[in-house]
Structure formats: structure tokens, C-alpha cells
Length: 291
Image 1 (tube, one colour):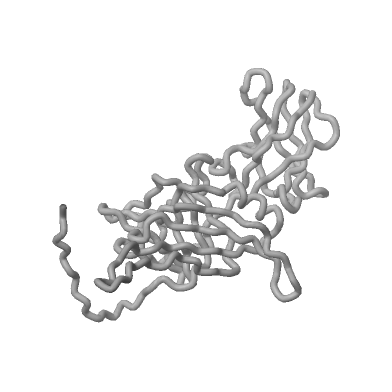
Image 2 (tube, one colour):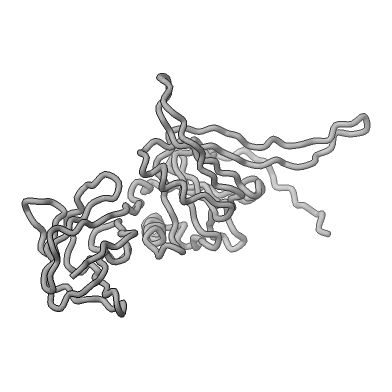
């Protein structure tokens, strides 16, 4: 058993950086790490995080909305107090309750993120990423014991309605012995994927499909799409139909006329978020095209 702990010196330095108010968070899979060389380059770091946000669903990371309230519900350290001694039992652990205020769509979406696994990187009010450092000097999020959404806190005339989310960390030593603070001023350039939905206009034919593309939550039209952004998949064999043109309608923002030949019974959606000409959008449920 290794008991020889080398005590580090405690000299005062000019670096007084500490984690400040937690303003945001990024949740990641367990195996997500940021290489040491990427941590040292702000441009590489932004690209690395945005690529991970746009990755396939099982591999992606999620940049949560801005935090509107915070409660420290951490477990206190436990000691045994007896006539013989005052002995440490356990350190306790870090547990936080965050408050979000966006809309009912986001409240419901956050419910799908309930988990007892995964990792979390915090963003504080000084534009710092707060995470843990590996033996290889890579960065990764803190292991979560629990991420749990709670019921809405309703407006009672003195406070606004909010969505509470509890984050409990698995191991306090990830902060207390290996915590890592990193300046990151570009957090506002991180993507958040917006779910889209499509609505078929009129009756599709073998050569023409007219469709409205809009945000799933608030029906904001999605403009700026090009023909390569659309994916039309045949219901029978799963092959992709060739779409020749996708012409936007200037009178109806978000409406596109798709043309081609030999359209059949199929499903229409957008290509994966990382492949779109505009970012960051995704169609969770493609629309049925009946011909």
C-alpha cells in the first residue's frame, strides 16, 4: 500500500484563479477527452468541441442553455466524534442544483438527459472551463453519479418559473486533486443543435415535393438550406433518392420546392447535423412522403 504522499509547497503566487459562478455546462460521454495539445490552442479547442457537438447522437456532447439559478446541495464531510478521537469518515461529495429558464420544449428535452453516467464540464462567469486533468494531461469532464431533472418550479408572484436539474458528482477527488481551470472566451461560439420538423405542402408527385422546414419548438422557418442538405430515403430499400434542386420560396420563408425524377414512397429529412451547410440543426423524425 502506497502511503508516502509528497507534500507540495504552499508558496503564494500571482495566479489567483479559482472556479467562479457556474454559468453553463457541457455533458459528455464517459470516454470523451480533450487532448493536451488541443487544450493549449483556443482555436483548436473551439473546433474540437463544436465537432463533438455535431457528432452522431451516441458520441456527441451537449452544450446546455445558460444557467439562471444555482443551489449548492453538496454532501458535507463526515467525521466520527468520540471521547477518544475526532476521525475523518468520508469527504462528502459535490452536488449542485441548477435552474434553467427557456421554454416548455426545452424542459421536456432536458428530461431525456436523465442519467446516472456520463461526465460534465462546467463554464464559469470568468469564461473558464472547469474539468479534471488526466495523467496524460488531457482534459475531461467530472464523472457524474446522477443527472436528474425535477418538476417545474412555478411562478408564485415572486419568482419566475424555472426547470431544476440536479448534478451529483461521483468522486470529489476529481476536483480536489485533479481539477483543471482553462480560459475559454469562445464559449458563445459553441453550437447547440436545434430540432427541426417538416410539413408537406400540397400533394407530392414523382417529380416535385413542396415542404416547410421549421424549428420543432417555435416554428421559426429554417432558411438558407441548399439541395445537398436534404435527404430523401426510399421506404422499400432504404436508398437515397437524388434531389436535383431545392428552390426556396421568397414569399414563404422556410418553404422549399424539391424536384427530381422517380420519387416514391419515402421519408424526407435533413442530413446529419455535421454535414449541413447551415448549423446546427437536426430532424429527429423525418416526414412521410406519400406518392
